Length: 305
Image (tube, rainbow, N blue to C red; front, side):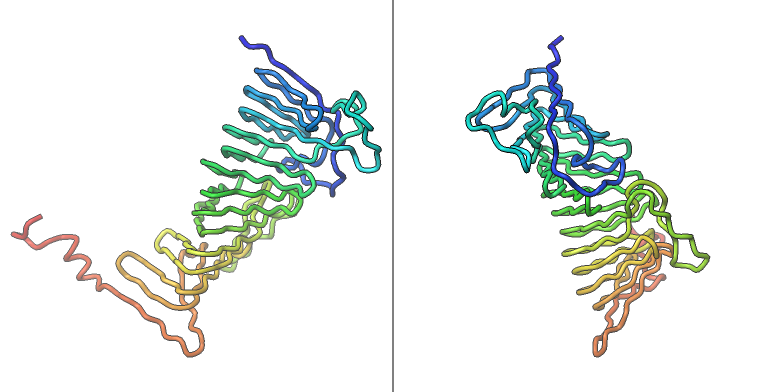
């Protein structure tokens, strides 16, 4: 069994606003606990600590696992840097601050409630943003699951996730929204869930960490209900009302039937979508009669199957 190398980085981090518990935020808490199987290297001139082989960094309930981890540090604001590299510049001195954490290879980031994955991850402490790239880009919270092809950003202080490239968000209650770029805004932990209304179309989102507030969609928008698929150029979805508004080259498809227009409203609670007429615009539709559908589904006797 390989030995496990450990290092407790007594580095201060830049001051930040209080963060909601259990989201992916590494700007709060105490020292960073780093362990690895293949050793930990301190490159003094470059001011970087490198851990290799099943490397792991833990800070305030956030765990980062990867094949390799790099913790980049600098003199803490208000302190005087050492005149020459030496003991005063050590990451254990407490006079430095981590400004960037890089993870490479099979990146897995976990908290008590959230999980993010990718090939490479960079956490910028100044901006409080995690950027994941590579394959299998995912962000999972108790109430939603986001996937992307090109990149996945998580802005912990803003409670915002940005997914780029074939981005798809699915929810616990089987709602599906997708687009080229998807921006999801999350309600902070501890915010009371809206009271469910008896009026159709006003369902409240489920409680829990990282509850969705709204989702903005850009490019090749696709929204699916149990019976329909709605496509368009851009849109916005509100979790509180269960409604989505789609704009630009809108197409609503149900089976073989399709209607086209410039704007549509999708009600996830009823599963019904409707076109909204713009002034001077015409709605166009292709409606296949039910009788014709049945004939195609069941050929008459004597016809080849």
